[in-house]
Length: 640
Image 1 (cartoon, rainbow, N blue to C red):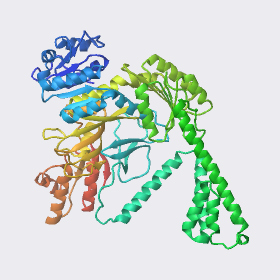
Image 2 (tube, rainbow, N blue to C red; image 1 turned 120 degrees about the horizontal axis):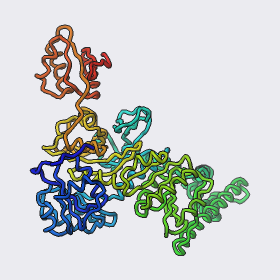
Image 3 (cartoon, rainbow, N blue to C red; image 1 turned 90 degrees about the vertical axis):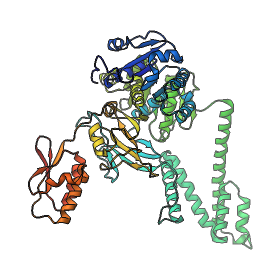
């Protein structure tokens, strides 16, 4: 992060940070790079962790209650461009947000909230424009869930009602895919790709050319896919039992329908599998005049089906009784499946651990939680909870574990448990939560590759992004890098308007995920590089804090590629016009500005990004034009 000048411009509206604990000071450290006046409010004298912050805020620090109008006026809230309300008490933050909005109708207001105030936060965001509510638990749950993701589980981004899957490595060649831009990734790290998959939203009206049969076929395919996912999550014994039951139904319907048709076969088969015997057999014998005509195989078959049905009903009754007794008596049996995916172990974390467990359960992942004071062995939809770590370790004895998350507020206790559990399961991924520790990544590397996730660093990045009008919708951790899922709502004065996707991604180091335009109902997933951004668009990107800072400061990396073009032979007016239009389109200028490139001499195009160069080369090649791609420094890369 670049150093902040000693004296920022006084004419600029200040950024006001209320609540100067560890999170407030982390936000101030990030705001130093934006060349803006910084003001602070706290009820008492802060315990400064950085002498530079103390000297910078010495003249602009106001001591008092952030909910009081005169305190906010004294701190400059009336003319502030953004106000960050970061007290650990969300009730105080919400009360202060209302007071700030009365004093300043245009400032961006960022409110630190908790899960208990989620409904109030959503209502405030809807009713009061420019208010962003940041839930630290929600952001940390996203980051830790991806860090604890087993190798067999693909990460994904859910945006605009769509699922974007994250694939590491070369992967399959798909038409709709895009490589994620990760800063400082080593050459040995595998590439990471985004691939568009299935929609989450409901199907709309029938498209042109479709009929009801197409809709039914699509519905059947979706149900079959869900059945496959459900079967993959079951143990091998459960899958064999399901297959055997389906086979019994098919064989029974085929056998018992030979006497009275397929409808009778269905009724008899279902009746026998329900444990009954007399009524289904009487239905079979209704068309037979004498008992001597009954086949012995028919008697044996109906008896076997009835016995199987009795066993099925007995098992069902046992399960129902167990559930009822468990709910009434509050006693649950510890059930860890012997087969299936290796579980993920979460130690402490309370509400944060519960959110992480719910996210992992969406992927049919078994989760074992340790929460002091919880019910020993309590189980709820694939989440098994113990009150002590020793009891969980005893239940996991002899079993592999996919990942371990240490989520208590005590960093040293987390590290001690992490190193002990890493010896027990060397192959398991280990993630440690560090609430106030600033150097999380170096600490993880020092301790042997642990994933140390700092709550303060993670939330501070999201808060600063929200202070400049962006909306952080989640966090994705890939190869040790935290990527914020950020939504931009572009307005006329936004510096991104007029850029194509390629310039945005190459210039600022972000990855475009979704583009929603006001005149279209459906979003454009993984937008192509030649799409131009305009006012009114909503753009969702994956970005680091440094990328967001470069966007806010309007400091893009310039393009580094040119095309060397030489037109040989006479060009017909039609061909000249087509080539002129192609150059103007891909370079991003008026057609008249490229006329000098068509005089038959060698020329270099203005610098453009590699993706645009590749598209321009392909377009010119179709028109019979030879060109060479040149990187800055005069290195020829490819000839066409």
